[in-house]
Length: 337
Image: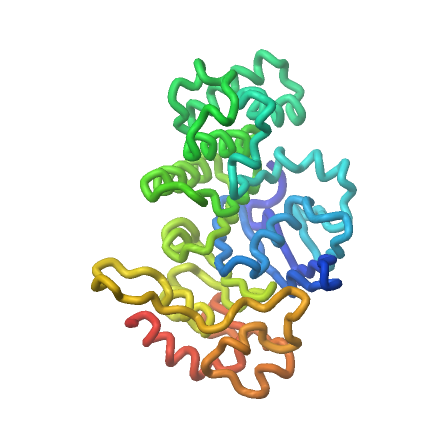
């Protein structure tokens, strides 16, 4: 590990990502900025299509070749935007790793799990095949895979969804990366296995002193697993801050809508879930102003004129809204709803 303990490990400034779509160029991410020191955790939350996974792919250097990236991504002070794929390959799986959303597509069905867990070790540490196999077994055992030594030569289809997710975690952690990105790591898992996987990731992050970016659409998952959070909508960050601060004083109408829409324990049978009216705008149709304007209940003309600036509603808690006076008053209602 290098660099000062007080300096950001990863620093993103004014990140913009333009993608080519069937309808033409689309600005998938606009003006995203954040930083993480060693050991810190950050959550990205929002509906599908808001830019969470695209942001993660930019950090990993896995965007399509046609993507146009602007702004800055620095890892330990070194610029990653514009880095050649050959140099990115030296970082990917080594200093920065990712647990992908769907383990069955993240794993190669033609290779044993032991070979796949050992691959980053062989590529980045130059250890022997025997040493890599031994470490792969130790990693699989550490992530709680039953009978790891006996099952190391099995194939992905021979495991359950939860077990496959444990294998992908072992792969991501093989080289003890500085930064771990977990993109919806519990998708399609039942709630018991979901809790086990999240606890496992948290333990390993703390144990190895990694920084973590956790991507989720689940507010409960974010509330319990990260120190800071960013709420994304329409390719931009609409609210960010310490997790406790954001949940205590939700300043953006979109954050409040997400909170109101969560399922409630103890609700009477037949009670309908609250929803946010409207749909997420297509990337090719993003408005010039606030991306949430068409779904917002307190919108006014100036909201549509230009993308609102970030307003600090408390120390380290920023909201991208021109109507924070009204939205902050309504936050009390969202919490109590």
